[in-house]
Length: 523
Image 1 (spheres, rainbow, N blue to C red):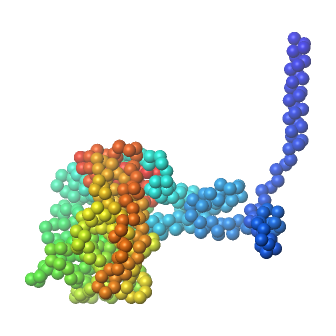
Image 2: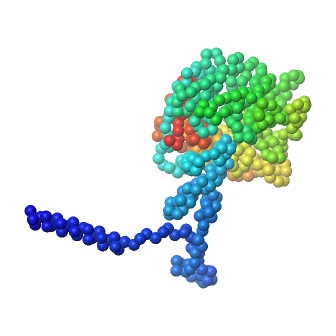
């Protein structure tokens, strides 16, 4: 036993000697140096030879505040890459200001006005998470990741008779549902994760709810525009959405009844609706643009215009564009797309006769025989409501620009894509991405191609040489959600809603009008 114990002690002593020798050789770690940029000597630029590290004889040290200033102009993916270089830059990329300006650009490009108003109240971690989420959506929507699009689905079985309208409140936590219970139409608010977690219904007896529009006012408040029909009368109601409590509350602040409204739209504090006046022998198409007061309970000013339109072929879509100097209304039908400048608006207390207006921009699509025409929100490159025309086996993207010189010669950006017949129709259209019905409950996502080819209207026609040549196949840019061949729901999709801020998609199948399937694309 003695020799064995001797060797054990010798082994432990040798280990201790080796560890102590390594500790003595190990030098103390120097403090992290100030991040610097190495610049070459000016004399090295005079010679014909190439530069290397030996020719760089001085450096410029950048203060962390200057790095924060530089990163505030970078994209999200670039900020992440810079933070992966060293510890000093990693600490700089965690600064509040860097992610504040990154998310501020996203709010402008993605047209997220409600998030823009409350961005100052968010913490630095929340700013970083929302900015990275938006970048991941762009990355996956372009098909840069070969894996199946990740998502988790939640099925909500609502205690109603039927659902025919759904929309998300900004943030994706709450879902607004137009539904019917027995013989009454109503509005239902439910949590997107659990329909039984606080539920509320507002009944509208005798009126049939047909349209819902959620928008953000100029003061940053969330408003809900509802349209309901009853025989030949149409009622517009504006609700103020209170989100301060744990459960959102709706308060009706303004309402108006107008005979036979065609359609309506809202942007900021402005509301536009087109209606048919049948008081004369020949029906007239009138448009009214109204501006709400800061309290939303009264109209501040309004303007009613008479638009020459073919009887019986009334417009079906309206879009607003509001700038500091001009208000523009874009109107579309199956034959004509036109833009009108709103004349001087008058106070609501002064009666005003309709003024006849003519379009300053128009695009005739009667020869195309379009299957559908959609007005989508503004693209970041061209701050004007854009148009998508589906005709034949092609898809035409139109984006007019109204702020360029010379006047009456506004450039319009076009791009044409092949539209395969297996694509059913776009379910949701946004400023950047769209969701398409692929049939059998399958849903595809893709980025909207930006119109890039300009054309001008001269001598009574559009100079569109080379415009109608298809640039690409639209189906190549659409990627199915989930695994191939598997649908998010059974059967056809009746309606859908999308929240850009949270990355959630809501679907209503035609097989069961009480079900709402919510797909979280960023689980």
